Structures are given as C-alpha cells and as structure tokens.
Image (cartoon, rainbow, N blue to C red):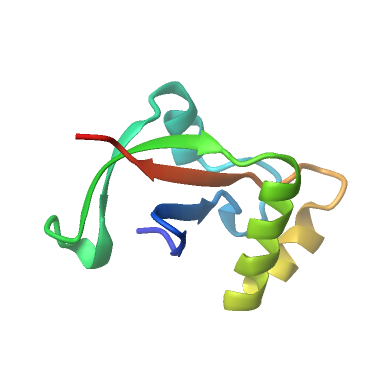
Length: 97
C-alpha cells in the first residue's frame, strides 16, 4: 500500500522509503517493468492499467513540493536523505485502451 495523489489523470507516488538511505524495492521493480495496475482503496473497480515513469526536473520538484504539502513526513524524509539520494517521484499514466 502506497500513499498517492493525482495530477490530472496521472497517479503520483513518492519512492521515499520512509527516508532511508536506499530506494524502495518497488521503485526498482517499476523501472524494470513499467506496466502496472493500480487499485485505489484496495478496490479493482477504482483503478486500472498504468505505465510508470520517473518524473524529472521541474516536474519532479513541483510534484515533490505538492507531496510535502499533503503529508508533512515527506519534508522529514527529504532531510534524512539529503546528500545520500534524491527521492524519486513516479508518474503513473493511465494506459490507453
């Protein structure tokens, strides 16, 4: 289960790993196999098929700032990883039918 928010039709997830020094395993899995399924609130009728990609540059920074506004933990996670790693932001885009 992951915390998420949306940006238009995309689902946004943050690979914070609770501020630990390494990226979470699921992040590496999504990079290797970008096709994924999302079940919002654990319900298959509230989700679908998506393609994952890493947000970069200004897009990543804007989305991370939004995450910090939604959940204050993300500010602490960024402080914990400062100098160790940049916390990735993933954009999950609905797959076309």
